[in-house]
Length: 125
Image 1 (cartoon, helix red, strand yellow):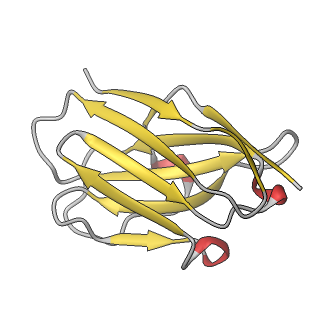
Image 2 (image 1 turned 90 degrees about the vertical axis):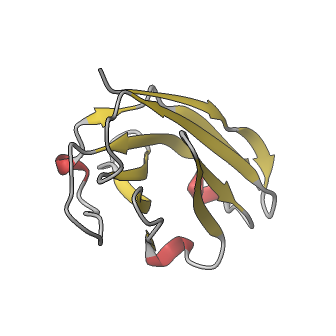
């Protein structure tokens, strides 16, 4: 049974940094993608970054390139967020799909089947 458990997040002032973690368990292979998404009330869940577990290939939303870094270490996935902006206040989720032959990973949240519980990130101005 696949399970994603998130930790990290919290509150920070604009320009600050936070790191989110996502512990993934239950897979018998590494040919799958993990994505980080964020959502604010009334808005659609948007992709932030994705990573292909087998080789670590990563992709980023244009809005976070150069500031956010997705990485992995064994069963842990990380999202390092630097130079945070108030408009990035949101609930952040990690998610994974069933299986993918090769990168790139999809950005659409609808293809991700397993989801973490979410963690709030608040950036104050």
